[in-house]
Image 1 (cartoon, rainbow, N blue to C red):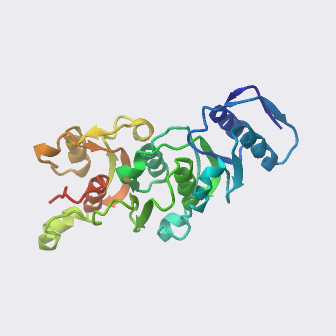
Image 2: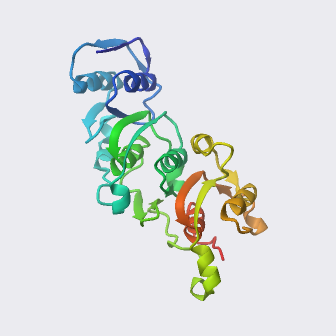
Image 3: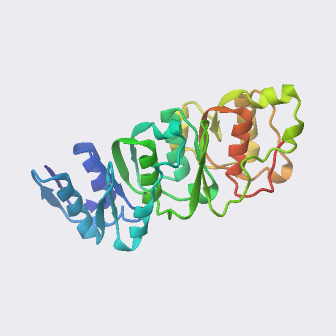
Length: 278
């Protein structure tokens, strides 16, 4: 059973997650809509979700591990599918998640990376979006990522998913930068190659006293303020040209990646091939 007084839709979704469980993904933009009070006693979960969707002039559509609530005009989001698009290592992972409405996708991916010990990064076209109120019980990582993108109203044809055993990178289809932005990589000495192959953990813009809290609350920071934390985490000096000093670095967490991979992923956040590293 479940009951509530008149309240914003996002608050009600959060309350259902706390008191009932299951899984609901509310599309971003609906969270502040006022919902009249209602009570559901002994009904199926589907009836509860439908009761939530109707006053929002929305539809509740079943997903494998949750229900997606959105207006009919956004039915195209239901075409979002990440099954088969992630490397096997990531596809086999499961997690339990809950995110508040309007959380930037950069923080969502950082939190997932931190909690699951993986590397999930996206470019700034994607991370600028904000998710809707959502919670999901144990679910495969591809379904969690799909639900997050759906809640943030990111069209399924607006991005591509790249991945290796090290990372998953979600890039806008407008981002044509190559997978690596390293200059003259073919001319590296064995010592330089060994350095770039060293495995590191990286939290951007900086780890802070509590990396978990950083993942939740970090905001973009200018590159000039990131160079020292990056140097400390890489254990090698990282510098940049002054013209790039104020370019914002989006929050992200990278776990167990090679140093060279971390550099590429950080730069690929910026959807341009005009910034390179050496």
